[in-house]
Every structure is written in C-alpha cells, then in structure tokens.
Length: 293
Image 1: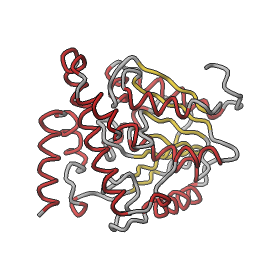
Image 2: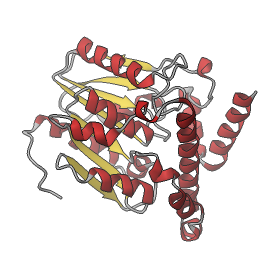
Image 3: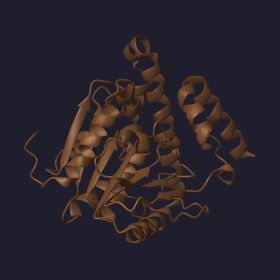
C-alpha cells in the first residue's frame, strides 16, 4: 500500500513539474517504482571495440534508464567505436540495493561491472553519469579501476543536499523562484529525492556500509582522471565540485546555470555531444597533471 502511494506521488510530481523527464522515463519504462514492471538492470552492447563506456542512470532526462540509447547517438562522432554498458539503479537507492531487493547493491554492482570488463576486454574503460548516476560513475569507476569518469552534477555526500542549511537555501530561494521557476522546482524535487534516499539508507545500512566516494578516490593508486560538469549557480553541486577540486586528477567545469540536470542544459545548447566526445578522446592522449585549473 505504501509503495503504491509513493509511486503515485512520484509520477504525479514528475508529470506536473518535469513533464519532459516524465515522458522520457515513460518511454524507457522507468517511470514506475515497481521493479517488477521495469526492464533489466544492465544492458551490454559489444562492438568489439577498444573502449567501453559504462553509463549509470540517474534522475534526469538524458540519462534516465536506457534513454533510447542517446549515449550512442551523442558519441557517434567518435573516431573509434565504443562498447556500451547501460546500468540502472532499479530501486533508486543510489545503487546500495541490489535488483533483488537486498541491501548488498554496492558489492553486487561491483561484481557485475568487473565481470563485464573481463568479458569485453577493452583497453580503456570510462564511466559516466549524472546526478546519482554521476556519483555511481565516480564510485564504481574508482573501485573498478577505470581510466576516466565523465560526470554531471554528482551529488555526494548527500549532506550537500540534505543538511538543514542547504534545505533552507533551496526551499526559500525566492530570487530563483521568481527569475527561473523551472530551475527552482528542479532543485526542490532533487532535494526531496536526496532526503528520501538518505533517510532510507540510514534506516537500512550502517554508516560504514555506505559508499564513501571521496575516501575511496583518495586511496586509489593511481587515481583515474575525472571531469566534473556542474551548475555554478547550484549551491549543493558547487559544494561537491569544491570537495573533489583538491585532487589534481579532477578537472571541474562550471556551467552558467542553476540546473542540476546539466546534461539537459548542455543538450539544449547543442554542446553535450561535442563536449562528451572531446572528454572521451582525452583518454587516448598521454596523461598529464592538471595545469588548466
């Protein structure tokens, strides 16, 4: 009964405030919270290529579910073909819950990813995602020893959205409400979603069992290269960017927006494809220390 009520309000709020997202997720079969009505959690497209892109779903238009394979279209200009692996967080629990409903998701997805890496045997592996999918790309890209992450508005730690100071700044941002109501509503919905997920994780797993993304990345040797796109007018996402900015391997790219859904922001300006292709092609170049910051 509770799940049915939660499902109803989830779909109602998306259709009311974010109709584009709701339509896309309905097409992909990811709008319903009932996992029995959802497609598989992973899909592998093996093009016998030297590079594999692991795409983690998050709550946004471009990367929701499999999103009709926009990744393939966006990355079409690449000179080299890519393998694609689409991974979905069925329960929307930041990948901490496995598809069968157990709170062993982090280990489950790690094993799945490593098996696919071995199966495809690509020379280069890249993870990408947005929002919670960006956090997943950062985390699993680290522990699965990938070569690079391309992430958009990663939301970690959850406290950047869930602490009371952040909540008050988001909910009472009158200036943004008046000047950009769509951006304001997007931030409110993302904040509510982050609070809900954080509370569910706190009830069901111990603190040490949660992902600690920054700590895992700090301990990695070598650390993979990373590019983080974020809206510089979005306070929580800017906070995450400042956290990871301490690492020379991370390039941060501020965008002139308050949107959390920065892939959609770039896509509407026809910049998403070229930027992603450029970031992927960076993998083939010799690694240098970050001098651009």
